[in-house]
Length: 176
Picture 1 (cartoon, rainbow, N blue to C red):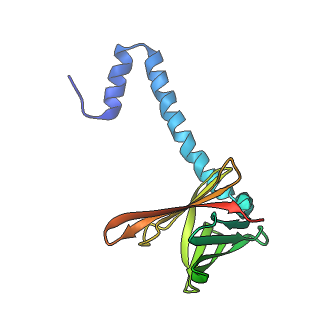
Picture 2 (picture 1 turned 90 degrees about the horizontal axis):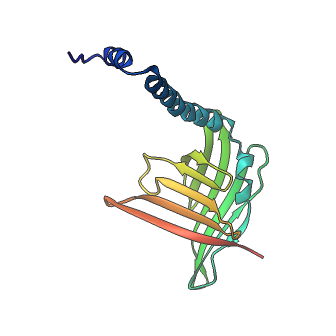
């Protein structure tokens, strides 16, 4: 007779099968629970200094348009940045940036054309990649930075415009 209660199903399975499959099942449940706990612990241990690989002066390869981004080193729990686009010998866009530690996490704050800032929370961090997200913002919703093996820096933004997914990826080289 089948029972709908999950505990009863497990008890029935244990009686009819050897104990080893049930033990493996329990161990797999525990193994799947551990990464979630470690991720929460890792997030609380993240420091702005973990993003030191972003600091420096960066620029796209020369072309019709040049994009530059500058990041200070971590000091006082923050990094300051500035970015600009240059086309036809004129600055066509600029923004002020900062990354700061707060009690509830690390945030990337963008001030496009010196307007009030928009917060993006750090949601994923590895030795060479950082993802900042703000699901309530239209565009971008996600900002990803990645330090590439060749020493370049990739910045990618993803968001929504007029109901469609849009993204832009820029590859920066260290400035000399």
